[in-house]
Amino acid sequence: MFRSILTAAAAVSVMAFAAEAQNYSLSPTYGSVSLNSGFTPDPYVINVQAGGSLSASNVGCSGYIANAPDFRVNYSAGGSLPLIISVNSSADTTLVINTPSGGWSCNDDGGNGTNPSIRFNNPQSGQYDIWVGTYSSGATQASQLHISELYSQ
Image (cartoon, rainbow, N blue to C red):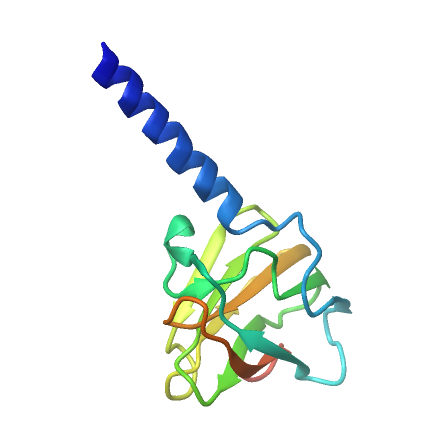
């Protein structure tokens, strides 16, 4: 009985940590933007410091990220263009996105070289919370986040 209680307590603490890890309800560290399909300039570029101390494995992704999102995009879809979110960095970075549907999208090395890139071919309208990660806990790396309908980094 005691072992069952300990196991249940451990499971609850792990779930609490996972729920705490990537908190999209927090204000983004580097701000937010509202973009409509067909936006200019394209790409929309934001300077960020990639990385953090929380493992993105809590949402099935790679790397270490901060608790709060790095950036938030409120996107209004329309037309046939994709939404492409990518990173340009001299370091090997990762990308974690909480989509308008509440799902998680991740990428490592999907862009040029070791740059991550996620392409939404039929993007939903709504809030995209974005984290840029590194592979070392607590390490940060100057990076550029690119929001585009045309190009990936």
